[in-house]
Image 1 (spheres, rainbow, N blue to C red):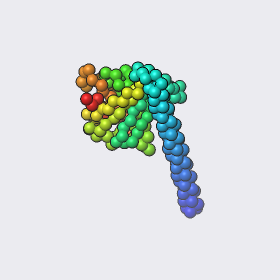
Image 2 (image 1 turned 135 degrees about the vertical axis):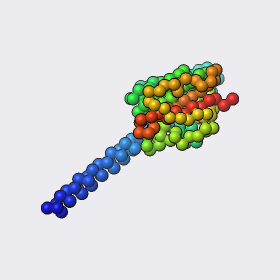
Image 3 (image 1 turned 30 degrees about the horizontal axis):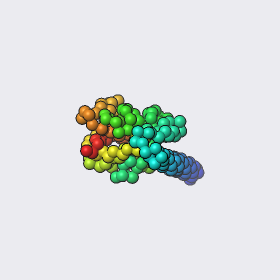
Image 4 (image 1 turned 135 degrees about the horizontal axis):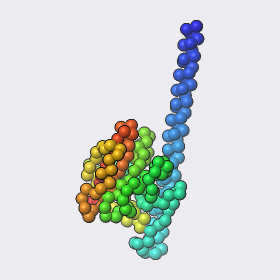
Length: 198
């Protein structure tokens, strides 16, 4: 009788283990497919910017790209952790499943603070590797006219999820960006602030 119960328990644990592995593979496999699509969007934005620059010789003409029903407002690139993503115009739970989102602020590379939110996926996608960033690391922001500005990280800290002070500019009349993602099992938010390198 004990052997039978033992075998049943082992079988149930084995099935649970296999199901868990399958679910993890599906989730992370889905993230990798999403990564490929997002890289295609980044390439499309860059191609459109180049086409506009070559055909019209205009610095004020902006490209218009939509992805999954959201307008793209720019591109964020962080060489240190090897990420490059389009930034979409709205933040919601649904939007954050799609790409990096504009949480607060004006357009990319405007004076003031632009706050962006992204998921902290365990596989390192989206803002999953931002915890590895350090003071002085560079972030490149490209707007829809093709202008790229380099920013340097000057602050990194953890806040309560209800604290929204991080959306404010630290220094007036400057270009600042803020990256926002979950940390500590979603109980806190990691904030990374960067300022234009002049």
